[in-house]
Image (cartoon, rainbow, N blue to C red; front, side, top):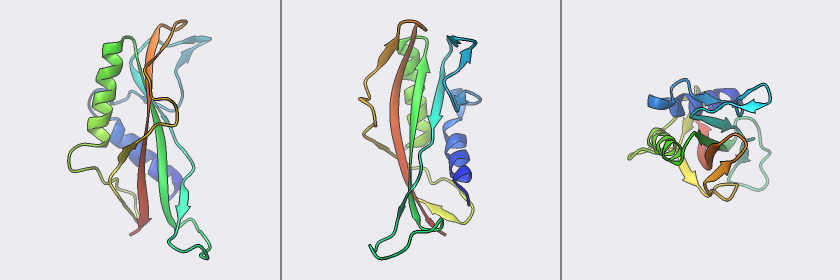
Length: 142
């Protein structure tokens, strides 16, 4: 069980259907120009180690709250809306998704208030539309 294991499990869950092979670790560029395409960017965050007592010393095996930001990028408003919808269907379907991470028991992924405004934005230079969403899940010892 590593931080990378959690990240890869989340990325694999996101990269299904039309998002297969379209989830990147960074905004895609060709030289100095942003690539005009539909894709998602996954930003990992450091886990928040949580134990139920204030006096306990945290460890890598502690209960951990993982929070990831996803930026959906599209060549049009309709494209960004479609990618956002498919991303939500992959990550927060009815009944929830429990990621599979060896040695851990993960709670269902939740959509939370975004770190940024969460509004749809337009990059005039690249002529791309995008929206950010924040997802989180708790990982506990199995």
